Length: 571
Length: 51
Image 1: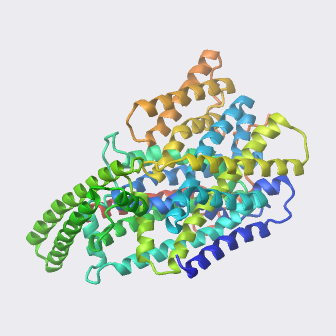
Image 2: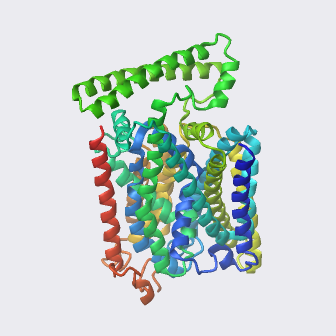
Image 3: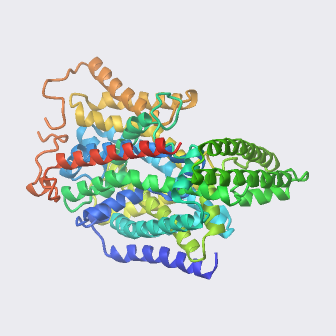
């Protein structure tokens, strides 16, 4: 990074954070601090919901996912439009009519205190864990880019977000997210355009798609019914819908974003904006990763994308096996590139036989390349114990640092930073609100002034920020960051969603039945997580169904029976 | 007693969608579903066209 990159980065980040504090100065009432001024329009809500979900991990890790596995991950988001429709039609009107600060307040009104506290606790537990991961991801980027110590980067980025979230509350989060998302879109679009521009001149866009498709990177929709497959149409629609229903409908970090709308209509339009834009947005980010893959078929990629780890390993490799593998990779890459060019040329010439033969050669060459990469990863892990073999999260940042012009590097780093701060801020805001409203105001101090609760909320927000920083300091690179966040969510979300579904749809079930059903179902999910190898998206479905069925059984055992008028939420 | 799970009644302003062509929320939801199905079809076509 040079001076221009630093200028772009600091001006963008500090400018937006400063604007958030200035925009919300003087907010004293609890309503304004936790819900905003009540004048939020649909676009701000829509962008805020989008920015809360799209963390730095989305923009850092998803292109790597596209590079490694292609477009298949987009299926993870197939359930989102369906879930958002249900939330808009059923959940949202109820939250707004009850004027709740948190989703768990509704559980207290519908069931009892223990169920409300259980819902709030599950949220605090899983979101507290997730918050650590979201702060860890951008810290990796920044520490790589700047050569900073990872722990120092975690602390600095964590403290910046704490400052403006504590100062401005919910409104500061929403209004800063609007501009942060602007920076994110500008950065990602600039990266995509530059990437396409850097592809070989003779390569048409359709050729790039042919190459990507030949390597299986454009396999976006998988109709397989095999439950071992992580991403299929069915896991996406069904598991993804449960995950999205739980995340958007019951996770306070999202609920807080859309209950603050100027009217029900504004909130609904904000949700529908996301229902329409979510899949194309994820497709675009994955496509960026796929195009990175095509780019690196013509430009020699590093043998291992985590370059600091690679350089360290090379220094500590007495037999110089890594350097030898690097040389072997050079010749394997050259041979493969030549064959790919022959393949594209055959396509241009319309020679189907030559095209088939060249393509078969490419696939054989790719096997050799992958074998060398695998050897390198094994050697690297042996030379520097503790180094993770998965370097997918470093693919995009490696491209940015090596191939983008100065100024744009600053903008892309600002993009990661903006995404990190926007989702982090919403999480801290929600964690602080839930602790204040569902725990502190409900259990510790019931009748105090607004000013007191605002102070309490600020303290809790700061406390959760510090806990997230501490958690991030002890986190390590998991299989893949974006998946790690979704796995943590999936373990808890199914049960939380079930509590809400029972609350909305099964009115004859009481608090005690759903409370114990939720405890048993959550324990079941923990056991399944350790003992069963299935796509994590299924945990949402299993946890939810188990909790709903157990609630029914326990309530029947307790003696209450449903009356004919106790079936639907609109009855 | 006030039922906390009853989403009705809605204010008149909240019933209108603000879209000239889609006057009820049901129509908006249907349009969103159609867009979703279109995406799945397009992605499937992309998968099949380049493999």
